[in-house]
Length: 453
Ligand code: NDP
Image (cartoon, rainbow, N blue to C red):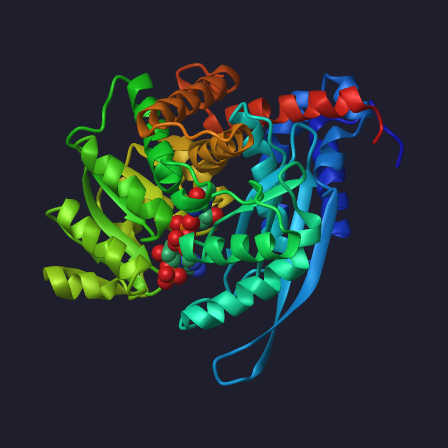
């Protein structure tokens, strides 16, 4: 279809979404992520024929490349197992592809396309030269032995290695891919290529990793929350916080919230949530870290250990709080849960996970005047420190913890400022709109500079 200058914003939105759904059938998560972005970008580009004529949004929603491969490995009983591996290289207009790998039984192409699309905007917002990608597998690490995880990671990397590289595409961790998996993946890449390069981030400190990387996503999401509150003359001291998840992002978000004087009363996993009215403390947090990263146990064990309530099969959004941080997975706050949070006095939400809030639930927060930080801005701290890990690897140097903490804090403050610049609407700041427009402009202008490629 040729470019039509005469369509209204609504007609343009309808035309665009119809085409997207037709080209990508049955990919609900991808439709959702694109719809949320298009709702602010289509009005923004409406009077900017340069972007519209060049079909920038259409090009950004068509990944540069999708790689899919069979991963065969043997379990401890000698059975042959088959999984599917993917890498979605969405956009490298402003730097090499960059984004995590997710190992989870629900991984499919729709999830990875939504994540790689979001990652493109997020990486742009950091101000660092990184394009967007995401990958992973429907492999479920739960209940697998270390040896099985190692064999799977080696098989996965054997297939992925020819598509990545320190100047091409630099994967990292995500759900189900932590320090152990990154070690196995990096070791196999080194064996296959006979090269020691910064091809992955989130590496161990002994082999090219960066200080502050493991804390960065959780800390960054709390810094963003702190900046939103400051904008309204508020702070975190004395606030009650509700968090979902108990993995990397959730635990370090909890640690930083505690350090800034907030009381963290919930954590969760896919089996339910715990409610600890006294709040976490450093000893309890260490218990969680050991439970989740060493023993790989369930959150209900915390309830037994500290004699608090466990709510099986439930999410923590029914608990009264001042601030909420969804840090587990996508679509974990629905409209009713958003309404419950608002009714119970929540004034700010910062998304540690990717797209944890359904679109109509975002609307509930915005209409109620709740400060709402979308994931592409709030959780960008992780990839930002990954970008700093890449710089350290290239220069063969290591920065100190203080230096990295300072850089992370500054990057998060700048992302906040960019969102405010493009999202201010009178008294209210629409951080969704601000993050989308600020992330879009840099990528779009680079694409314009390249002509039609
Ligand atoms: P982890 O694997 O460390 O932890 C994931 C947590 O979420 C676990 O508590 C897990 O519980 C829970 N969870 C996973 N799937 C579900 C589900 N379907 N329903 C309920 N709970 C679930 O992952 P991360 O902490 O690294 O990632 C969490 C989120 O943050 C993801 O959305 C990820 O994309 C995002 N993110 C992560 C970054 C990072 O640096 N790690 C960077 C930016 C974003 P269980 O153990 O029971 O599965």
